[in-house]
Amino acid sequence: MTASRLYRICVRCIMDTTDPEITFDASGVCRWCRFYDARARREVPREPEARARLSLLVQRMKERGRDKPYDCLIGVSGGVDSTLALWELRKLGVRVLAVHLDNGWNSELAVDNIKKALDRLRVDLYTLVLDWEEFRDLQLAFLKASVPNAEIPTDHAITAFNLMVAREQDIPFVISGANVRTEAFIPDTWAYSALDLRHLKAIHRRFGTVPLRTLPTLGIPTAFADIFLRRIRWISILNLLDYNRSRAVALLEREMGWRSYGSKHYESVYTRFYQGYILVRKFGFTKRRAHLSNLVLAGEVTRAQALAQMESDDYIGSSLCSQDYDFVVKKLGLSRAEFEEIMAQPVRSHYDYPNHRLIYEKMPNLFKLLKKAATRP
Ligand SMILES: [Zn+2]
Image (cartoon, rainbow, N blue to C red; front, top):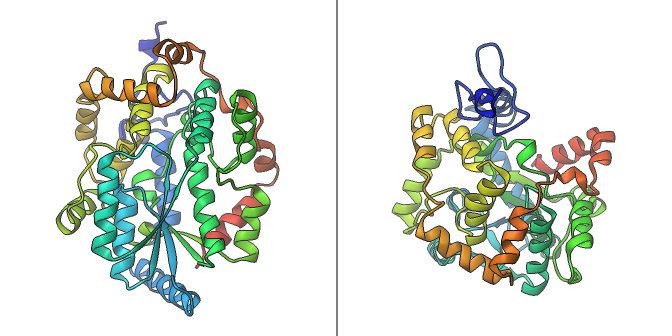
């Protein structure tokens, strides 16, 4: 039997067998559709509960922020979700400190979008510029490890940095632009938790050459101390709002002169190239499929529109892609041959390297408790 005869795609969303662990029910609906429904039911309250929870949250933020310069902080990337969350917070009269982790890969457009939003909403910005030699070496280590989630260094550092600022500046609420409606799932085979510090360090030890001295990191004990002792809260505010991505884009364009990147997470040149080229060429999947499936399930686009968007994806082969190729390879300090050698290495699983899986699996209730405490205002 040929591989193409095994190909299957969900009848409701557009997830398919490029996720090797996908399963389908008798009517052809995939497990991700069911997963999406369950998360939406559990984590996205309906009216009037959503409104009540939002006003309780705002009240708590203002109470705990009293006598302090800020009620909350929010990590901004220049993307739709975090910019919209920032807009909503300001509309609610909350005093916000914006924080931004500059990993060296911001597109000019992202920088411009962040600046416009902060000026328009009169919000202070705290930026951390990562040590480039250290961070470059870590990104390269993940590429050499040949694991699908090479964005762990950035995602880990962002989370650690947000909590670090909250701790240092005594800000009790960290607001996140993450939300269930438009990003409820990504297959396990395509991703791995960025929070696993043991895993990050293991890959660095194996493939890195520059010591990790300045990168913000977050270990399990610190995370527990932040949530249970310092009572820092981590809230996905968009789950409490009637969040619709297309409406958000229109609002941001109209109110703040925000400009679109063309695709989710393309505000970073590295992410654009990583998702658009490396994942497709080396790993054989595209995260766009999961992003678009989420939008189908959120009712924002039809399944036919999502399929058409997949068809019209012309990043590979475009002049932007070859421009990104040269830029990324050069910035990482590689020759084309060295980069191609990495591309030719066999794909590895995150589980091929040391990780905290055992702790997560042995003590699931502990982490559920942490999540529950962190997300309750
Ligand atoms: Zn599905």
